[in-house]
Length: 209
Image (cartoon, rainbow, N blue to C red):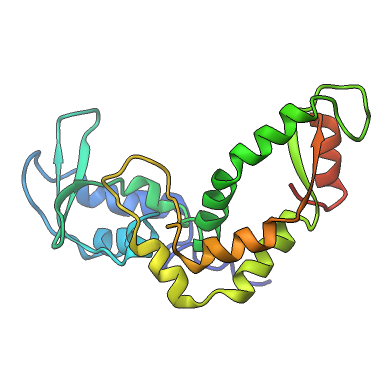
């Protein structure tokens, strides 16, 4: 029988990580700085923002601002900043995930405009259209094309512009090669306005939105 791979480091489950961190945090008094190599590594490697910007917290504290507590990390470049160790228990989204979401947000106005111009599903020709589907090339094919053409530096530059203090979603700068490459690949894409059942059928048929 194959031994189950650890979730992170030598931890066999997400619950084991939670228990280890709680054993450290729960005994610390409120408003008191403390250090923990385990929590520092966890946030550095698995936090959705810190993992892509290579930010490592040096020490921590918890406050009574919320229940059971609000957790802060001290970062050399930005000082104290609220950070959730709990969300780091799960693996962080990949860089491709963040870029995918940013590019989907980028074309939201295009998709909305297309649905407004085509209010009835273009597959069943009866139900109202609620989704915009990339028929040719598919979304996955567009994303594959983008990642085959951009460089590691292009990706680093995109995340380098991401500001943790900005509450808006991650967006890729207009002058980044990712944006230019995506626009070129998406410009002639064939879209279809679909109802939810027809759109769901494209997923079951191994197509993509």
